[in-house]
Amino acid sequence: MPHSQRRIGVLGGTFDPIHHGHLAAASEVAAALDLDQVLLVPVHSQPFKLDRLAAAPEHRLAMCRLAVEGDDRLDVSDVDIARGGVTYTLDTLTDLHAQAPDAELFFITGSDALARLHEWKDAERLTSLARFIGVTRPGHSLPDLDMPHTLVEVPAMAVSSTDVRRRVRTGAPIRYLVPRAVADYIAKHDLYAGGMDD
Ligand code: ATP
Ligand code: MG
Image 1 (cartoon, rainbow, N blue to C red):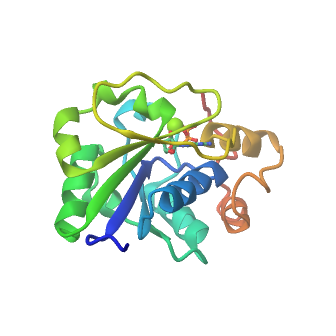
Image 2 (image 1 turned 180 degrees about the vertical axis):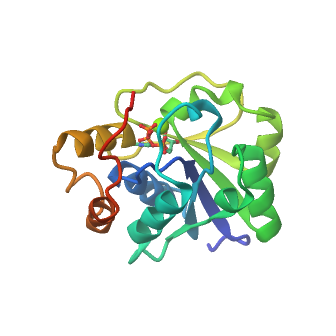
Image 3 (image 1 turned 90 degrees about the vertical axis):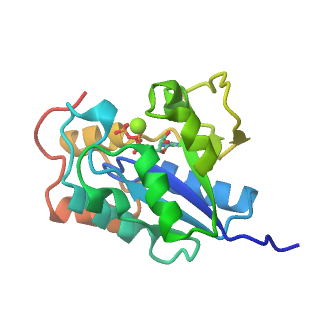
């Protein structure tokens, strides 16, 4: 039976850069929960990552847009980058809810991010704006959470943006870890080639 409300998944992240782990998770949750759309929402700046070297928001947004080309169910929202400043999920969900007041929102997080949910601003209020969907991620066990959430097992992809950045810096291959257009974009704009990382 069709759902009465439009169902929109929201995958927030730094996407520095976007990789196949993000895309596999978005696609798997869309199928598992019968979502109409999953929005990738790159943060402007991330409260836990203020000290890290990151590509400019415009670059991260552009790479997300390239990555979803050709998949009708995946899209990109620039709400967080357009708002600017430190991104809080409460603002993300509030803005997306205002844009689509009749839709049901599903906020998707990997197990590593889920484990830090208690540190998030207004964690309880978040659950009134969206259903929380935890996805499995290799190397990160699922935390015990006292807030309601749904778990979705996604095909294990042991890729992280940190690893992609490190690979670019050291000349190791990234070709099958990120979409081809993203690899081309990184090369063209000489991203991640210098500087420090964790
Ligand atoms: P970084 O290494 O810079 O932290 P990352 O690979 O963790 O990058 P983020 O942009 O921090 O990517 O992650 C955005 C969201 O996607 C988070 O909820 C994270 O848990 C989830 N995620 C990232 N990579 C994977 C993966 N390989 N499998 C499942 N979920 C993932
Ligand atoms: Mg991360």
